[in-house]
Amino acid sequence: MSIRPALVMQRAAAPLPRALLWLFCACWVLPGAFGRDPWRNADVQAYGIMAAMAEGRTSWWAPTLGSVPMDVALLPHWLGAMFILAGQGWLDPVLAARIPFALLLAATLASVWWSTFMLAQTDAARPLPLAFGGEARPTDYARALADGAVLAMIATLGLLQMGHETTPELMQLASSSVFMTALAGAARAARKWTRVAAVSSLVVLAASGGPTLAAALGAASFMACLLSREGTWRRFAPWSLLSGVAAAMLASALELWRWRLAPALALAEADLIVRQWLWFMWPAWLLVLWTLWRWRSHLAAPHVSAPLALTLTAAGASVLMGGNDRALLLALPGLAVLAAFALPTIARSAAAAIDWFSICFFTTTALFIWFMYGAMQTGIPAKPAANVARLAVDFVPRFEPWALMLAVAATVAWLGLVRWRTGRHPHALWKSMVLPAGGVALCWILLMTLWLPLLDYARSARPLVQRVAMLVGDSRCIAGMNFSAAVSASFEIFWGRPVDARPAAEQVTTCPVLVRITRGPATDTPVGWEFQGATRRPTERNEVVSVYRRTVSATATPNQGSVTDGAARRAGD
Image 1: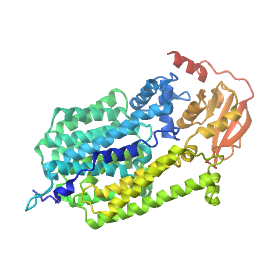
Image 2 (image 1 turned 30 degrees about the horizontal axis):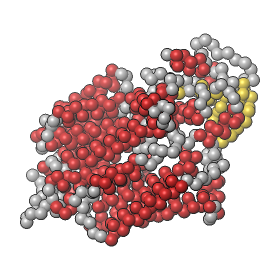
Image 3 (image 1 turned 180 degrees about the horizontal axis):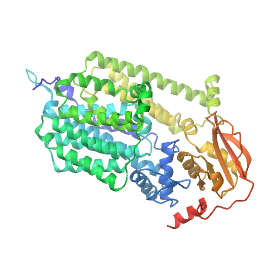
Image 4 (image 1 turned 90 degrees about the vertical axis):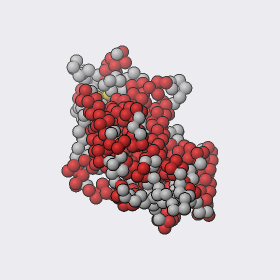
């Protein structure tokens, strides 16, 4: 049996106080859930489908946006729609839809904690006994490492924005994290709950839009179990395989298989993918490399192979999909667990380097956020304020006392954290992750308080829809020429009326107004339409939105139907 590299004294196994750990998690999960619109692309598209389901504007089994069928995972959208229905009359629909996904994010953090806690108590992961005693007790050691894993998860930059959206990837992330927890529990003692959790988590992952990844995780964990020296974990191999098979059977029965492979694109953009990985998985990947080096003789042990199987499977899927960052998101729980096992072996000089980099980087970033906030509120200095006005046309800053108080409190807490970390010499294993996690939480709070009006103005489609509405006037519906699903969702949400975005909508629609989005001014006018006017997204220079009004009455053929009739039929159903 190879010698374990961890030498840990009892004083280093001090846990992070529970109140502080909960505060860290709350400061990271809650900001961004309040006071903002759904942002562009995936966020607004997912919310648009949920809202349409809840309001009866589309079928729950075959959802549409802009009268165009949407090929999406149903389970996450059902979840958001049910919360919208539950909050009708007393809760803002956007906030209601975000609640279950915030809970999924919290469940992911909890799964990371429990996975690390259980894996750290396996025989191969325990610290070596000291010659004269005083080594860390197994439970305390495991708790300290689990705290460090949660901090590493919070510190990871790639999870910051996507972790606060209402997209199916949050359910996929939570499902894969629960599967890792099942593997961790089986490594200690295979109980009934580990089998149920393993099978159910991969089934949910498949139903959430990741059937291929679910089957791949089942196969990867099966191989990891077979290669393990731990008899308990080897006996769990059939259940790992069964989990992947169950997910594959569900995907086949419900026709959930979707192939989005683009390996040629990955080869063509290999340099971009490398740069994406460097920032997306920062700073966890540094510690993961150290873990793999120091524990290189224990790669088949559960505490390394279980999270590594999850990480490599998700990372491989991301590469095969042309560098898809949403697939890479599922690698982060495994990375956080692997990063935690670097903490007992990391050199003091490396820990100091992490601390000083975190202090310099996050303090500088916080100062910049405060500086630009002052410029937006006071107009001084004039040049930064003018730059904001140039980039966000017609944006009017507003002063919100509650946001300022929260930002001040977060900044004071950061200064206190820096003083604690630099003024003393704590021995706890998780100490190296405190400043990276605290810095990320600080900057996220500042962005979601001081900069939230600006970011919401820039990332929300509401300002654009309001500009277009002034040109459209009182129209019962609009036709969208080459609208994406996100654009259709934006108009249905913020304009509140039906959108017809079917292919060739300008020819088949009965709507009196046509809206067209182009890169640069449109040079041609569709036949049967008269140019009404044009506008731009306030933060987009090249994108032009042109509005046309029908000049010749046209009636849709019976098999084409109209957007309003279709909406009425769906509502009746």
